[in-house]
Image 1 (spheres, rainbow, N blue to C red):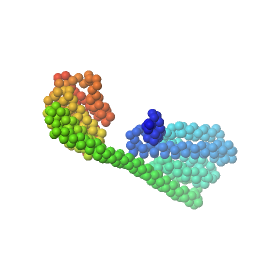
Image 2 (tube, helix red, strand yellow):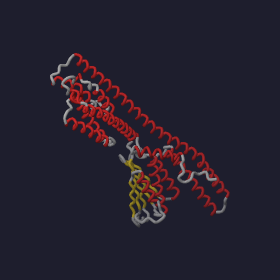
Image 3 (cartoon, rainbow, N blue to C red):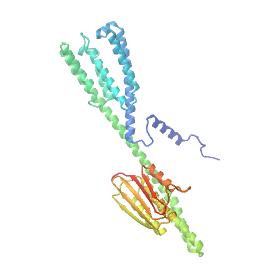
Image 4 (cartoon, helix red, strand yellow):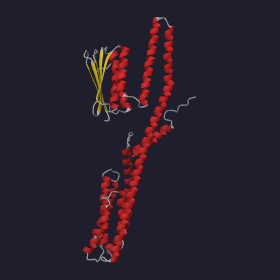
Length: 427
């Protein structure tokens, strides 16, 4: 009975990948999204949602404005008579629609929204100050200024960005004085009352916005830490299972090979058993090295030097190891790539180059790590790699994946040099 899912069949893992891919595409993010990018995407989505709400609020105000223009008594009160009033109305309608069209743009959307909001505020101040009787601080539209303070605080919760609606009240007061309107004690109280309400609105909204943004950053950072912790715990679990399972089997193979070797007298068979034992010892050493990398307990420079020493003892190849500079921080993938390239280079020096001496140099500079392997073998043409030999291709793919650089310099009869470098984090 086949228990494996058929090709294309939905599984929990595939369903999860599809949901992740859908969210990433909707937010225009990549698979390697950072916490900063996730926060920026969230802030952009939040701004777009609030800017769209501003557009719908404008449509409601424009509907009221059309009603004011349609009623002669109201349009006369505000002085909105003649063709210029309709030109102004349709100008507001046009820039509101234009604002909606660019809302999703990360930069233009914010600037256009802010500019049009300032235009709305300017029109509001004009409508408040224009009536000869009942205008200025007596206008029934004065309460609209609180709405603008709220909108600015929600969309742009920064002190300087909120300044325009706060200046609307003193500007209205100044216009009253310029229009020879006397400011009574009641109007002064109205001014102070509105100023107090403005500062309360600004404080509450800015405070809540900062708390919300801080909480979101903490959640995103915590999610990243939990994901990293889960990866570390899974690697440690796999390391334990591999050590207790495959490691124990290889150890038993070595012991059995040693036992059979002591019982065998035939030279040819003894040679084969020694080779089997040597292969098992190399396998268990490779296993231990991989387990150290999984547990992030691998010291790169010492690991490379130990491998060069072991390889020299096993093959008789004269390997000279040199390391310079202060060791820098490298990811497990970067350490593994350096180790694999050293393995491949030494293996090629023995199998193909028939080299007598190999010089290995590990150099840590300020921002990069360099591995240079030079042999005195018979060399080859790097542009004509024999079919079926994938060592150089694998090395180049490792370098490309990690953003490194691989240079192979060789010619027939002139030996070979493999130079591999990777970016690293300063310690």
